[in-house]
Length: 310
Image (cartoon, rainbow, N blue to C red):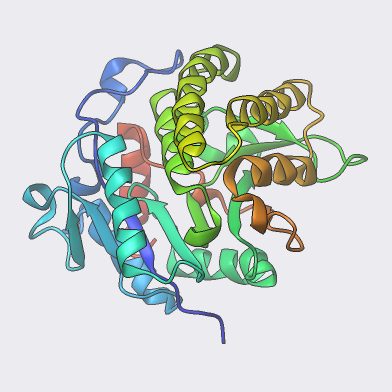
């Protein structure tokens, strides 16, 4: 039997509009606490995700990390109360992970604004995760032709190869992550997620240098902490090198799944866990809903039209 994992839903908000893609207008974008948006059949968006996660039988009862003042009465799961920016939400996640979960066992984290059906969640786990359930960190790219994404066709897309001799495929980032907390540089992971969210709708070429400059400052801070622990301060060199190398390969359409896994392992994992088989697994899946996070009114209308349960 597959292991029943904790499931954490990120439901905070920076309370400011995100960057507007050039294809869209300011009025097209949703803002605020998207998980609290009501759906036509009565549930909030976050409550619908909770119900679908429960229906899979693959997870413990979900925990929602967000402001209790917003979500009380809108969801019927435990709320881990935190208000403020995404950075504050992610810091609260770290505290919860370290105090409530077995650091060596896998746990799942998801955004609150995706709505895969229970069968889609189960299919993704069965076809892509279960074969690698002993890995330290698992994530997914979603392969799709732009026109198949409907209202989400505007989202930034990338090209990646499954292997050195494979052709490039168009892919979109998925929004479900599974990892073993004890193996991962949690503070670094959460800071990278904050950076990625801040520049999430920027074209890749425009986002890399602002992210790099801010990320370099983060690495310097971490190296100073490591120096105080008697560790060599090498993050400021090694992590930017791997990130820039991966970005260069992505831009030249030479990035492969195995190559990205190696870069990610060097960035995200503590050194002692990098030698265990395939410690980072990045799957390529055709299940579109994991890439269709709900950022616009058109995307909300599309998911509303599907009805309860998808």
